[in-house]
Length: 201
Image (cartoon, rainbow, N blue to C red; front, side, top):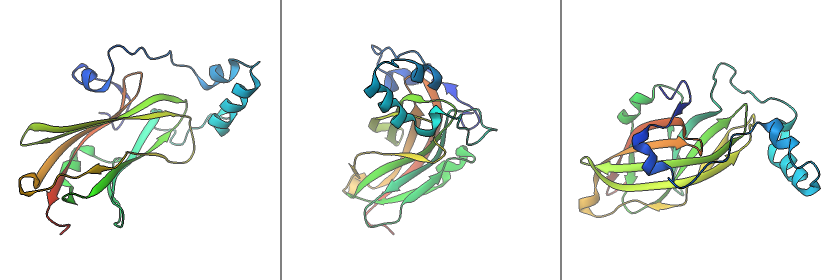
């Protein structure tokens, strides 16, 4: 499954995740990127700053994992409260059993922690589809960007969202999340749940 290797994006998600009119640029290695446009001094300096240590050494953080992007954690971030976190490195089929409780009407953000190794990754995207009683109620799609390999964890924080409020909005919601890229690789796909309550308890 996706937790052990990078997969190509299944067809039934393409219309949700990828613009049919967009043609991704061809994948290039870090060596190819550094070799191009050598005569442009400002571009060369920009690439050196962007790539950092990756331009001089092959960065492989987890040698037994062949993936370029290793998604580590999802966190719900609410100001004034400890982050609520999902560990995405284990058995992701069990994540549905962990229930996040969110107070109705609060502002929250989603943070994705991930590693990039081996090669630069282009056009990362985070797509989240939320449903209730089997019916879709919300979809958000965020362009995360392009990232070079680094030894440190990198992260993406979504803009603030407002949790639903009111008696009819309270209850359990199912979420399907996908971390993908311009080349239609799935880096991770997982399902999780949260419950909207009148208060945090």
